[in-house]
Image (cartoon, rainbow, N blue to C red):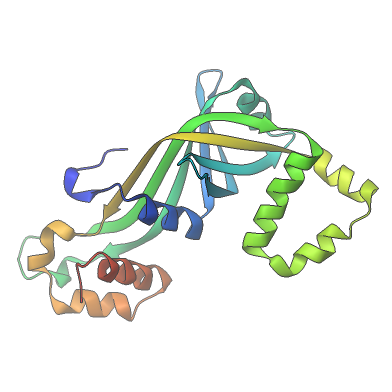
Length: 206
């Protein structure tokens, strides 16, 4: 990912916050020399020793299920909030429209998880994150029904060895902002409000 220095962020807590909030991610690896993409919910997990792992699952019929089994190098893209920026929000003439956004890339070696306990653990973590109320119902599935569902998926885990964050928020042009830019974000849609929250959290806006 191209990251100019003024857009780079390497604070792990910040990057993990983005990864956990926007965890419907883009999984990328190569198959037969060509890029291959799956769109999947994933979870980031930090170990006590500082290790960082990303876990999720794909359909067993998905070519990724076989590609990741070979220990493929994989990239997971987390797209955070993003929004159009009108040049009308700058004091200077000659500005052009742009797009501000937050993105995190995590990459590393993958392995597949095919055992029942491993796949149940992944599903349990995803359910706890997205729909904890459903957990007792899922636990009540009979063994036969559960095994049919588990046979249809392949779990995976990626040991992250490279983590990059790009926070393109116009921070190099703060002195040229009109107050209307912040006001527009704070009264805008979900993405704009999220960008405003990050701008305040990072100390760019009050």
